[in-house]
Amino acid sequence: MAHRIVLIAGDGIGPEVAAATRLVLDAADVGIEWIEMPAGAAALETDGALLPPHTLDAIRDCRVAIKGPITTPVGGGFRSVNVALRQDLDLFAAIRPARSLPGVPTRHVGVDLVIVRENTEDLYQGIEFERGTDAAAALRRRLREIGGFELKEDAGVTLKPISVTGAHRIVRFAFEYARSHRRHHITVGHKANVMRFSDGIFLEAAQQDAPDFPDIAMDAIQIDHLSARLARSPERFDVLLLPNLYGDIISDLCAGLVGGLGLIPGANIGWEYAVFEAVHGSAPDIAGQQKANPVAMILSGAMMLRHLGELDAAENVEWGVDETLRKGQVRTPDLGGTATTMAFAEAIAAEAVAWEHGPS
Ligand code: NAD
Image 1 (cartoon, rainbow, N blue to C red):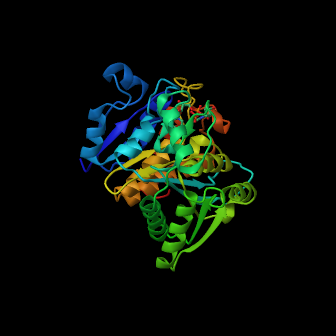
Image 2: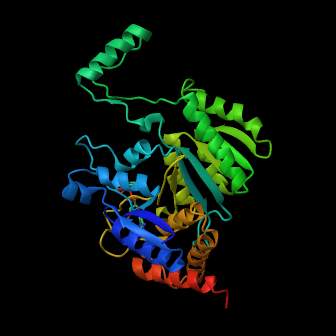
Image 3: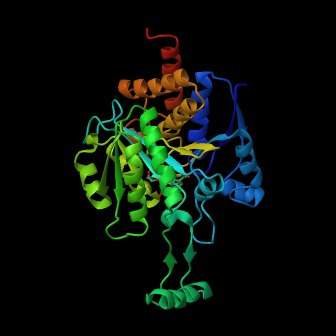
């Protein structure tokens, strides 16, 4: 086999969309050996941990993984598996392309943008002080001492660190990504006028590094203004470069702009490892009913093929998705159809294979 890939099926609709993705990627026939590993609620039952160490070891060994969505138990002090993967493997860049797909009617046409989101810092670094704890009380005292800041006694606190090194590496990654994917314009979203010492660093890093990439234009917009402009004319944007939290929110916004969460692929990339996953969650409301749209995870698989250097296979899979959507005969309920998750995947695989053998 040419590629050893870790497959994490995940929770909720995860196993359904993961099986669909495996079917399509197997049809693309690039020689993938699947190493199935547990994570999420299922792993908590069998292995006593949401992210068992042997799953992490397998990803370190294979270097590339694709995963279905994972349910994060609310409360109970669990660290989100997604956040843990990003931090433990230092997957500092999240890539989320959002493009208008054929046969999916939306308010805007011609959207073709990519979100590059910093993935390890910001409010998602996980530095939190629970209301009423000794740690929160100590923080409150210390903040009063060092800056005269007054926190309410019943406040919980989440910190927002953004470092110079973290900002520069995502900025440079975004410019390199734009260059290698023939994109020409980066828009940085920030709120540096309010968060001067965190977003300010992010903005400054972009302004400092931009001159090293004279072939890529760069501008910066405050995140609230950017949201309004995206809602009005998303087709005008090319690459969006965002700190962690804004990147998370704007990814879902852009998913909505091009037809829904079931359609947006994603990749989490670091210098050593890459984990591909759809943007959507585990959708417990439709789990186990074969209603889930597998396109997001299948397109994440196409991104993975490109990352592996299997460019033709990646294009075949994307063609298979586009052609199935264009014909419109087989589609899941979120797109107004009645097909099952697996039937949708079989149609995509058939189109991808037909294209591979040349258009008829
Ligand atoms: P969600 O994305 O699971 O669902 C939001 C809505 O979109 C639901 O109505 C759902 O039915 C629909 N939807 C999502 N994916 C779909 C698909 N492929 N096909 C058709 N419809 C789809 O968001 P949520 O309900 O906020 O989160 C549910 C769980 O997923 C939570 O535990 C959350 O922590 C987790 N989550 C995981 C990831 C991940 O693993 N990457 C990402 C986001 C949320």
